[in-house]
Image (tube, rainbow, N blue to C red; front, side, top):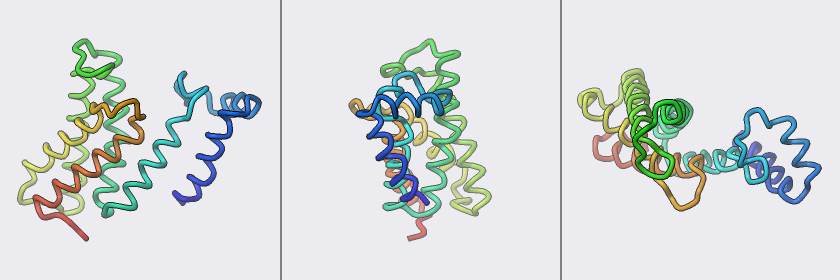
Length: 172
């Protein structure tokens, strides 16, 4: 399914960069869910799909699911709290308040996921906050000018893999 989505979305996204009529049509349809800068540049969907492909190729299902849950909930909550309450800037437009929101959200998500899947329960009070910290770091980490929809799953997946290795939760 992911490969089909990539085969459809990525070429269409790249093609709209050279075809103004196609771009206008796609922006008319998808404009309400696009950020302003995406209207004339590659959209976040392309980066998200490529990041998800990286996850699937190099990780086990638990790391994939936790990372995607972090990205689906932690990243938007960080953005909301950062925009609404972010007064203390950390890196670029990332704020302490947004990063803390990501940490709390990702810690809760990790705790629920680890408990529901019987993962690392003997170290639960250590690994859930560490996973939350990984989600917050992945959210705030700048990697040049790369879109965070690509860098988030790569950074988070790699760091969660290390956490799972250290605490013996690998399924591979």
